[in-house]
Length: 202
Ligand code: 5GP
Image (tube, rainbow, N blue to C red; front, side, top):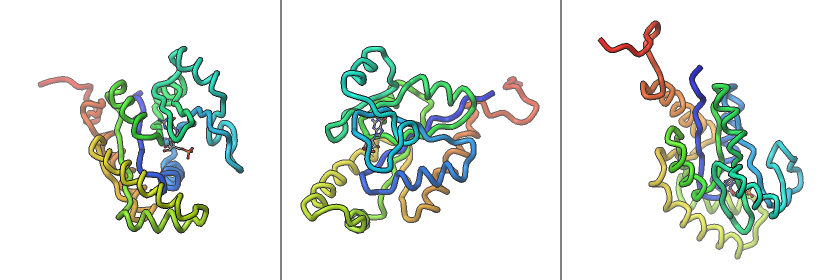
């Protein structure tokens, strides 16, 4: 059985990564969403094992020493990491896996996992991103300005990724990412063959 595809999705905060990823796993039964380990305290409504594995800093550091992470990074003063065992288990079952991770984590995976496919999710414009952040209604003016400055910096990393997908609408973005996955599965280098052929050369 062919191994599943490891799909990295990054993008500036407020671009709608979570919504697009949730839509993708709704429409593709073979696609799973990775659950990261974090030292960030749970937000209201977040559940252990569904949203994150919540842990403390000591345990997180132990896990780094034990080599438990495929990648890890410090993002906004908390630590986040992807457990290598969980990733291997899902990919070896032939299921595809989304990692919704930051730019630093994506760079580590590109170095240590050659078959991974990376996608940068971009807003239609910085003005649209500003509207989305304001639209959430949870941030004051100073916080909005800080998040927009951070978003501009995060946007600069787009050229480190294999693909850029614009999140015009959730449906369109999820459709494009699904198309990228389908195309990746047709790659000869991933083991795609004409029916009845085992890879012989004439
Ligand atoms: P939040 O705390 O809002 O859920 O996530 C904050 C940031 O951490 C987001 O940019 C998210 O993509 C990133 N993140 C979540 N899990 C991981 C992970 O396992 N590794 C890395 N490198 N970043 C992560």
